[in-house]
Length: 216
Ligand SMILES: Cc1cc2nc3c(=O)[nH]c(=O)nc-3n(C[C@H](O)[C@H](O)[C@H](O)COP(=O)(O)O)c2cc1C
Image (tube, rainbow, N blue to C red; front, side, top):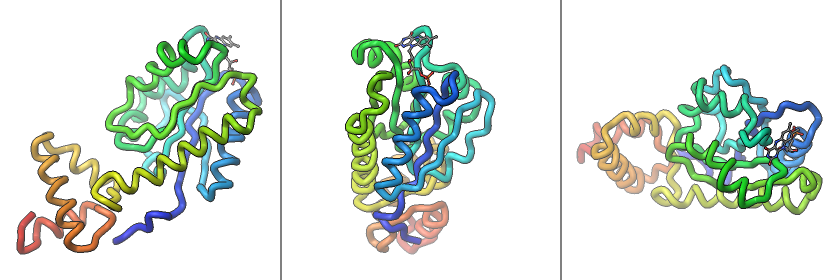
């Protein structure tokens, strides 16, 4: 019932681009390669506006990004956020965001990044980077992004109730309760887990806590 806090990070790069073999393809190859050098398991998936994103359940970190065309983030990624179940499966995930575009960073941060961020709910953003086409092959820029992702992921183990980790199913159960109750249940579960040496909370832990003599 425990999960090693230094276990292999599972990351998915969810991206979109109108082109094949262009800046975005080169960028995600480079991100994937560098993450793998840190020992991460990495997969890549090109977005489709109407795809089923339930496979995100299997990943700890979602690295999401695309180019900007005519001032709008590439359409299949935006479309997926609007039309598919992507938003639902992104909930509570560790996220890293990137954009490839020709505009200055300040403009990209204020006009383009919000087009993605407006859809995020209860996410920890490990890193966000605007990468200009001329920086795609700059290893230092990519290294910086990847290091922030890896560091942020490691820190995420320490922030919620010590070493506690939550399964997606346990988080979904918590989210389905009204906020007042979900906060109380969360606090009670943290106490129960700490008292019983549990580091990974699943729906079964919730049942055990309820059935325990202290009746959490
Ligand atoms: C048709 C077109 C429109 C673009 N419009 C914008 C834009 O509005 N703002 C911007 O910052 N960059 C814009 N760019 C630059 C691209 O975002 C940038 O070159 C990106 O790296 C392209 O990625 P790709 O090679 O994967 O297609 C545009 C590029 C193209 C080809």
